[in-house]
Image 1 (cartoon, rainbow, N blue to C red):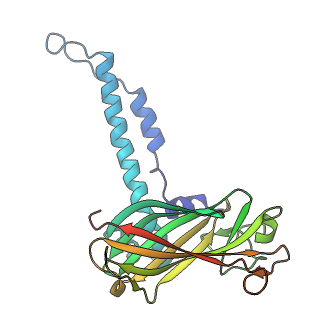
Image 2 (cartoon, one colour):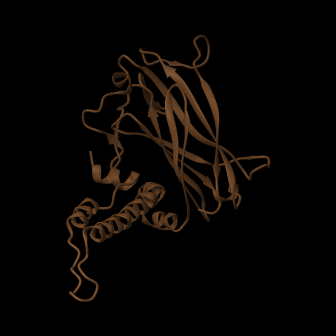
Length: 256
């Protein structure tokens, strides 16, 4: 698996950050000339090191913060799209909805002249294996993000779910609106769920600009789920129906 590509897609500490931290920790502050300010003591050196670490951590956080949506959709659509998204209004959310199947987290949204873009992650609960609702139980449960082909040796969803519940899920944009106003259903929204090697799912969505009001808004997502029987049959509709759908409202501020 191309781990560098995954780091670019999903955010990471900037290259060389750990090396720079070690350098800061081992740095010796220069001594002041005798007769002027006196010798710089251990507390002063420690303060300088802490200040350097704060700056490095801020740089690392900023790099990871901006890498989510821009890197993902830039990888998907190309460098021009990445540049437009990097220049957009970024909102790091981290809002999470918990269900018996998984924890769903919207990690970041970016608003541009073209629309609203978001990425997040679904992490399965103990005893649960997740699969995208558009996948087949026999499909490989992890893909190479470069080629969108099965990772060598990746088990199928049914194989990964041995001894666990296999649950198909979807995360789709439903409506947008300003606070305290009626929401408007979004038209033409796109969504994608991408299986990762650790069993979690990356979800992403985009909403065209004509459906995105300015300022603070409320985004409603639909989180759908249904179980897959051990023989691969979806338990959806008819007897033994396990289909459920939840509304998830996320507040998007307009000043990030």
